[in-house]
Amino acid sequence: MIDANTDLYALIGDPVEKSLSPAIHNYCFKATKENSAYVAHTITVDNLEIALKGFATIGYKGLNVTIPHKVNVMSYLDEIDAYADKIGAVNTIKIESGKLKGYNTDGLGLLFSLEQHQFDVKDKKVLVLGAGGAARGIAMTLGLAGAKSIFIKNRTMKKAVELKDDLISALPDTIVEIIGNGRLVEDYDLIINTTSLGMYPYIHTRQLDIQFIKGKTILYDIVYKPHMTKFLKEGLENGHQVIYGIEMLIYQALVSEEIWFDKKMDKVQMGEALSTFLEELI
Ligand code: NAP
Image 1 (tube, rainbow, N blue to C red):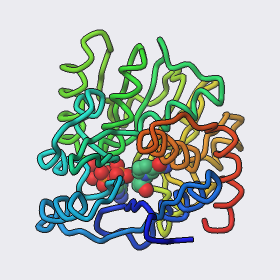
Image 2: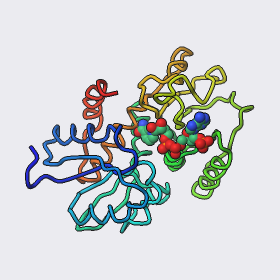
Image 3: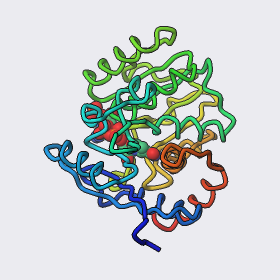
Image 4: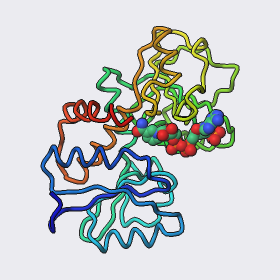
């Protein structure tokens, strides 16, 4: 029950109406008996700084940050965790004594889900489809976790080059390359779709023709709506192991809760419960 002692958390972004984050976090608060509530606020770019001051003043305990603020929010924080700083984006903020500290849990959520599939990224060859906000966090995380080589394929070459340059300067021991359409037949260990292709309502699109993929490559689609994207459906039909975007969504949320409440959660058990709960919402 919400009462005078309820701690407040929120997602900030624009738009936020379709987000599953309130459902996920309120489910967890109830399950873990935290007297906390989570809402979503539409915050425009022009209002971001003043809104952050407002959240700290009112006494919000934490925030999640989504499009379009993940990068520019960093200018308004009191402190940034070293890992988020390296990635160059923040998706989680903890507020203590009026001070805001930024973190990034997107990549950690993805990494945790890979671990659940017994996939150790160390020394692996990975292809990242896309070079947007999510690709940035994911590629950097995979590099920091020891991937041997990271290949990037993106529609807009300029963004692919920017991402490549940032990865090379942060990860001197990792091979980073951009690939064009002519070079897709490779024995990648993992291919991750981080583009919005396949996402509702563009469900009949995908970034890569599955026929070009050779070997035992694992396919991961971070798009979670629909659950079964065209990319993963074709992958399954061609005998590939696939990982669904809902896993990253759930685990990044649980890592945010670990930061806010400063305690370890049983992420596997809570993840399973959440996955059943979310089936009806997606
Ligand atoms: P973003 O920064 O806007 O990046 C979008 C990416 O998709 C860019 O690489 C863009 O290429 C590419 N793209 C978009 N339309 C395309 C088209 N018609 N043809 C080819 N490429 C196209 O978005 P984001 O934040 O990275 O999010 C991307 C997707 O990941 C969204 O579907 C989002 O819902 C999902 N996501 C999932 C999770 C999760 O937890 N599962 C977390 C974050 C994001 P250009 O550079 O050429 O524009």
